[in-house]
Image (tube, rainbow, N blue to C red; front, side, top):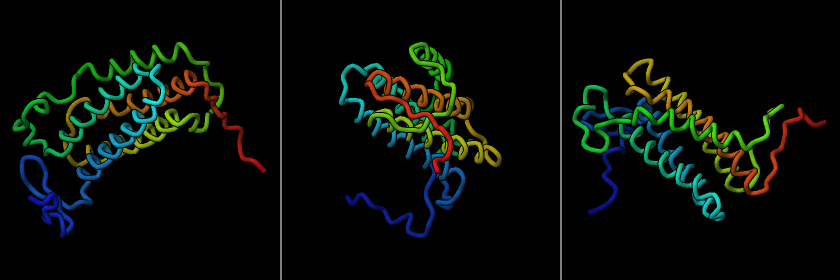
Length: 191
């Protein structure tokens, strides 16, 4: 069996539960951005594996990847078809997921120097990958908010994505500190 279906050759794609929409539909943009975010999280995990001392961050990223996979499935399903999803998607995003992100943010942040200025994304390979994932998560959040203006979005998804960008920012700072990679403060434009 071929992996390609040719069903999208005219610029349309199928949604979970049936129905077809343009590949430029806000729903497709939203779950596409979540898919891109999940790929960026995988890149960050690959970079983190270079330092076994950061296993707890990798474990968190593994969980976040699974949660993003659920979000993608929820977004790929029209609201009136959500009841037809099978496990694990049928229960949606765990209600405690944003709070768990907050707890981890607080734990990492206790070990960081408070910021007095903006910082430029970067640091070591893992920290830079986390900063990239953070910026993609913000774009995904914007796409989901855009979708919510015309279609229903499952409860908790926007809150989760809002918290996730902060989680990734603090994770990047924490990883850079733990790996000895300094942060670059933004000092304005150079001449």
